[in-house]
Image (cartoon, rainbow, N blue to C red; front, side):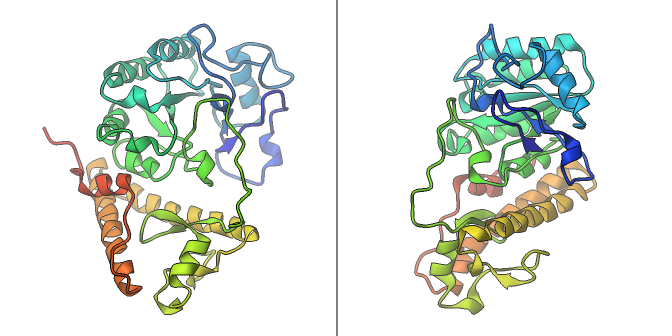
Length: 330
């Protein structure tokens, strides 16, 4: 999945991409448009140049450009705004298409206790697969203890494909989602309400964020080098095709970012392969819980190897994935 152009720019063509598999375009309308019940989508008068101002025309243009399926240019659906979500879902349902993903960029409040039942019903009624994007400042999964269980329920009841996500995508694959798209950078692992502010890179630390496989989290390359550089034999290593069992202390400069991204893709692809090889969804969930439990323990083990007095603190979502029941009980 690639992220679409800025509004008003031409749509890319699949023929220009060096990729042989399925390719999907995320129009990223939620980065520029706040959905309303009257205008839930960012349509061509504000969006793609050279297309007619209708939802169906935008979807047709994506198929014509060679994309495997079309994605709706849905605006960001704000806190508690079930009216705009319903309006978007009903417009998509009315088209009756079988080649479309309904992109649902939801403020995280819509997946919490107050609105979850209504959100679930609206998405279920949309009549097509849902490409879910989580929205909010900070990590949306930390909003409340209900978010992860509610997302798992959604994956089990709605044809779901979490996009613009992190390891939450694999958690939902383990609980019923049919696919996921993990962001290659931190800015595309969740979204925020528009207008999206440009990222600032004024700091001196230009090292890329690096996925540490054993910990299931990203650390800045400079942090890995600071903690492990004096003890290279104890530093995390990775056997993926990009790393070739080299230490992860080597990602120090801006030009190392492509390799850091390739490394991360290789790591999560390997985990996804293991998940998808499980005979049943329940066994996927157990497999994933074991991986998360191992990552939680590895936070303690890495601290011991580096002779630090305290364990590294794992991120809250990882703790919950490791400790929640692998599968909901009756």
